Length: 209
Image (cartoon, rainbow, N blue to C red):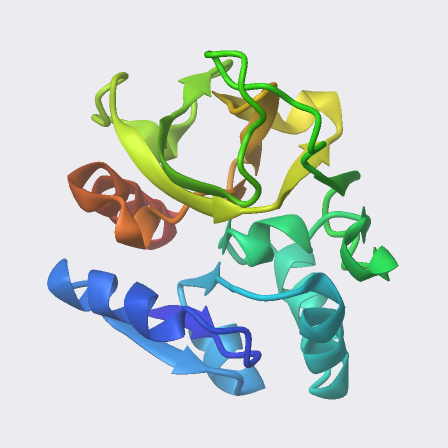
C-alpha cells in the first residue's frame, strides 16, 4: 500500500483517484503507524509553504518524514510537496524540511516567453520535461510527453540532484532527487497517461525494494 500524506495541503483526493484508477492500493493518512507500514509515501500538496510547514510541525509529521526517509522509506514529492523537502522557500520566507539540499525560488516577472512576451505567473498548463539523467520513474514514458503544471515557485536543488528541466521563461528544475526519493514540480495525477505511468513506476519501485 502507498500512503498519501495528509497534512491539510489539498490535492489529496485527486492523487488517490489516480491511484485508484490504476488499481494501486493507497490510503490518505497522517497516522504514524500506517505511514511506517506503507511501502512508500506520496507527499502531494497545493497551497503556501508557510502554512504547509505549520501543519506539518503541529502534527509532528516533519520529524516523522525525516525519520522514515532516513530508514529508507521511498517517497515521491509532488508540487508543494516537491518544494518543501528543500531547505528554504522564498514563499513566506519559510524554513522548510531540509530533506534534500536546495531552495525554492519565485519566477521573475521580467522573464519572457518564446514570443518575447512577459510570462504569466503562475505557470499554468502543459509543458515537457527534458531529462538530464536517467530516472526509473520515467521508464516507458515518451520523451515528447507533456505534464500539467500550476505554480509560481520552482525548486532549485543542489546540482547533483537535478533530473529534469522544463522551459518557462528560463530553464528550471522540474524533477530532482535520488533513487527512492524523488520530487517533481508538475502533477503526475493530472497529466494523463504519462503521469499515470510515473505513478505506476513509483509503485513498482516501492514493491520491489
